[in-house]
Image 1 (cartoon, rainbow, N blue to C red):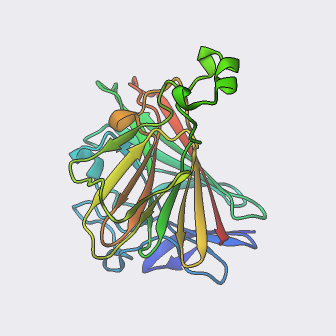
Image 2 (image 1 turned 120 degrees about the vertical axis):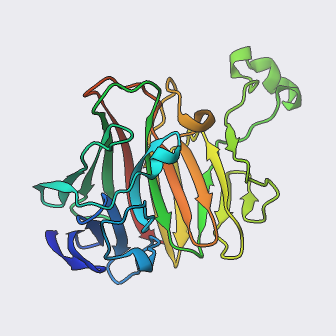
Length: 295
């Protein structure tokens, strides 16, 4: 295991967390961003925008690539520039906490705690937003991971079952009303630019596959994802993201805790925490767990 700060990808200060399996690169001159995640001997599975690497201090928001923390629901204030150095605390071996000052427009302080496992590819991320002033409406932490092109997202779906009318008589007679699948077991949100006949969508019985295609325009889907795990497969590797799901919570964007956005350059797996209204100094934490393995 190792934790060090060194120049990388054009920046003077990049925090490197590594063990025998994987390496993480975390920007300190901008962000907070996790700009690279790779297995030793493999390529970075995150998309990076080369013309934006190594730069800082821009007036406008820059996508740059990698993993970032935003605030949902999406508004123009979501694009507050994160182009200044971050403060950080090394909490231990392969354990770091990164913070930003309160954003002028939203009044939100952002923090990402990153913990790399001692021996495996597993990474735990705790995304925190703290209100520097009382919020007048509901907000949620929003973790966005930008992947390199040419792969596909794989979203497991809840198991299907028969409509009560289609059950065999013996099974129907043995079931109580509570056992019958009369209620929906999943929901989906669509955006104005989403086309359900999009050839990138492969609707399977137990999963949805969404391919990244360099020749296709932007599209997006959102889900209340009770299965909690989503994947991105590219270059012979599978990235897995496990997210929180709370049955008693209300999530942004029509009750979505998982969203997938893709365009001609990349694909994003996005997780969202519950909507909350924060008073001054109150804080909410949203957790993701990652792994990266060969297919």
